[in-house]
Picture 1 (spheres, each protein chain N blue to C red):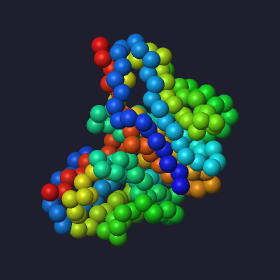
Picture 2 (tube, rainbow over the protein chains, first blue to last red):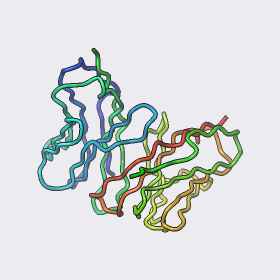
Picture 3 (tube, one colour):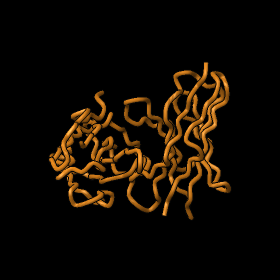
Amino acid sequence: AQSVTQLGSHVSVSEGALVLLRCNYSSSVPPYLFWYVQYPNQGLQLLLKYTTGATLVKGINGFEAEFKKSETSFHLTKPSAHMSDAAEYFCAVIKTGANSKLTFGKGITLSVRP
Amino acid sequence: GAGVSQSPSNKVTEKGKDVELRCDPISGHTALYWYRQSLGQGLEFLIYFQGNSAPDKSGLPSDRFSAERTGGSVSTLTIQRTQQEDSAVYLCASSLRERIADTQYFGPGTRLTVL
């Protein structure tokens, strides 16, 4: 079965510091991978996705993620955190060969300190 | 253009009552998804529609849950005889087609509280 692991439930960084949110997946075949962000009292917004092609994926708001098959990882990074990045971040996967329902990790809350 | 809309935004009901949650997808999107977000279970898939058909209902937690979609547009999620464990945020998403590469756009959700 496809699953997604997000280590930790909360990450706190200083404004201007590197943001690194980890995501690992379990799969015997490369899945399709996504990062979504959820701001308070709002729905989910797609940050970026990996389907095929280049393994370094650039998304909105300066975020990027790299698909590493050897490590079964898809970690999300941003070089310099802004206060507006404070939100909850979800890694998700779609199982290949099936329909396009998303399976989500449990999410990580990012706090940004002034 | 307009995004995915959901109504009501908040719903408080008493245990045992039936509730209906509505989703209006982005115009022209043929695929529609329902997810549930709760403290205990996180984000989980419920059901999806391609047009008016529901090829995958595997995520519906019990037979008290049902959903329909009419005219390839609006969808309604119905929960009968609500229980306290049904309390959650119900999210709807739509995509242009039912293809993996197509982005799912989410609505703001309906927060359901069962007393």
